[in-house]
Amino acid sequence: MSGMAVEKENLGIVVQKYGGSSVANVEMLRRVARKIVDTRLKGYGVVVVISAMGNQTDELLNLARQVSSKPSSRELDMLLSVGERIAMAVLSMAINDLGHQAISFTGSQSGIITDDSHTRARIVEVRAQRIIDELKKGKIVIVAGYQGVSRGREITTLGRGGSDTTAIALAAALAAERCEIYSDVDGVHTADPRLVEDAVKLDCLSYEEMEALSKAGAVVMKADAIEYARRHRIIFSLMSSFREGRGTVVGADRSSGDWPVLGLSFDRSILVLDGVAGSRAEEVRESVAPKLGELGFAPLSASWIGSSDGVDSSLFMVFREDGIADPPAVPGIVEREYPWMKGRIRLCGSVTLITREAGPFGRICSQAIRLLRDEGFDLLGYNAVDRCCHFFLPSDDVVPAVRILHGKLFTG
Image (cartoon, rainbow, N blue to C red; front, side, top):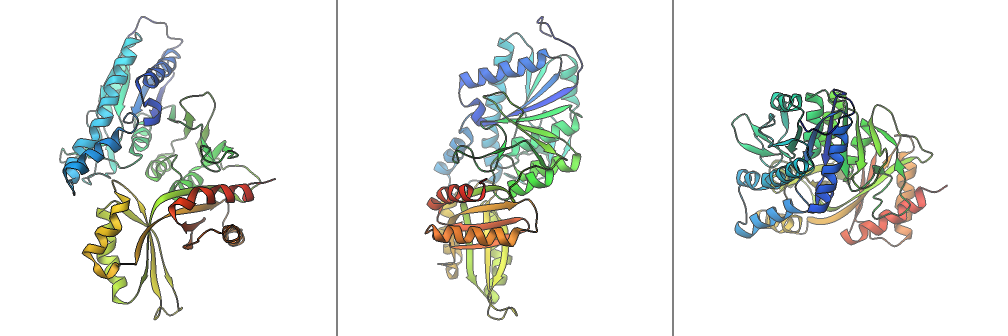
């Protein structure tokens, strides 16, 4: 252990996760190192989950696409896991440079066991004994997020936002006193505060509310991580790396507020598939949807448009990016493999309203549709799933639509 004074030993374990925007360069990484040391000086055992620095994951993915039009998912995992490994090693060096002992572990060294799915694996078990042994020695443990190892000893990655799941899983396995998720925003807001100036921060959210926001496209946290936290009853905080504050606490307590709408989210990479009827609809379900899964898109919703008996109805399906995808290329790939799909699949954006209760949903959805149409937006379609109303628009219209709806619905 360092010779530096520690206020009180054995207060418990704190798990902290830092996203790529928090460690985008060396100076930011050093700031994070100092923040971690401050936590250690208060007597906590500290486990840190780190993402790749800045946009390094995207850079590695672009490298793969330069050498292969269809890179192997196994080799992608081998490549993409490198970003977090670089970050964990240099962060450990920075902490050691401050006079404290730190040690870095990959996902596999940390005992994070996953299923066999490459590029979007799920954690099935955490064997954290090695982390516990190092904490007992007084060391700060740095864990590479976003990755694990299958029982077949293959390196796997957890998909976009997978470092959040790593942090929640470790907090559960270690019975941590606190779990803190750090990013470049100070919690969850009614809309993205980087794009909507009057967005309001939500002090607390239930698991169900947070999961609804995430599934609707809010980029604060991955739905898999929230589901894992709910299952293991892990209360966690979403906080800013750059300024002090409580952030948003996610757990059993529900949010408070006077608005019937909980929040607005958006997504610029949505695939809409429509105008499919008869036997082609069955082919979509059996062949096209799995193909889109291979290309990194997962189904968000499906509905029938037309007659009530289904005879003259057509299938309307929505897919969201879920994993490693190249959205602009996907419609062309699908149309080449399934020529009859030409003109029936398109890339667009979505804006989603998430309501607090199911009751007022119809009225608010209708109000939002009128607002968008009155403002002249090209509304390509809309549908309702649970507490969410999704509006599909050209990608360039997504942010202006969010600002209009927020200004009108979050007033008073």
